[in-house]
Image (cartoon, rainbow, N blue to C red; front, side, top):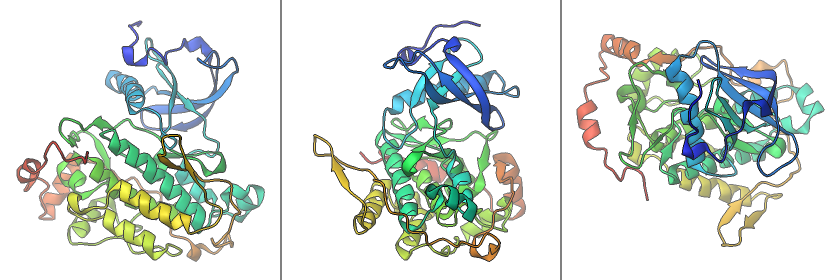
Length: 375
């Protein structure tokens, strides 16, 4: 069915005939991503290699329309070196297509796990990730998230699986499908029907369904764990439904091997129970930037308006990760888990455990102000 192009997408809209889909790159519950060639993009006469996200056969009307909302949100967010940009959209007839740049190494989680294997490092030095490279990845994610907060948005599902890796360890944050504009309220509630990736969620998100930029900070701490364990599963051996009572009692993940003290300190500050006591993304950027400046092979660039834009430059790789593919003790475990939990199911479990998710909801929401996001 044909409809009018949303004004927000007019500059991005192209005809589906300009898109040639190739092999499938990935598949989720309601969406699928294809490698594609795109023709007749504004500003170029050349064919462009891209990634195209579309709905799969399981998606209902609401989920298909959510893809269009994600396109609009990407336009609203604007351009940033560490945010995946919208190249083009097909939004007036189904199937809808969300077109983005193609990132050579795919998602960060699988990239990190490939870095564990010596054969990958021998075939492509990009997979040789030492302390400096891990810090470069972490810094770029923090920069992207600081920008998201500046624009008064939150991500809502920050995890290594939703971060993409390109040439030269270029990092771009993707999958803004859960994001919302926080300008009016400073927070958003998840519906009880939504599944939550519990091992990446803050306590206030798990217990009260509240999402915010400060909740993204908690998730960022878990992403740091993923980076410094080369894709290890967070909270290994702890089922998602058993995790909440432990977190409420103060349990936090231990410092990973090969993780510097100053990075673990950032993790701990990300995991403060009170959202207002957590470190902010801009402070993370400043701390990590200062650490990188102390290392060689890192240059600061300045734009014409003297705004500092720190970009990594080609570096000499220093491999400090274990090299024996068969020595599993060198790495944090990778576990196949399904930690997406329905809020209703979690409430049932928490009631059994004597830790109600609803006891403090009214008190908590009264404390949320319109200036919850810093100016």
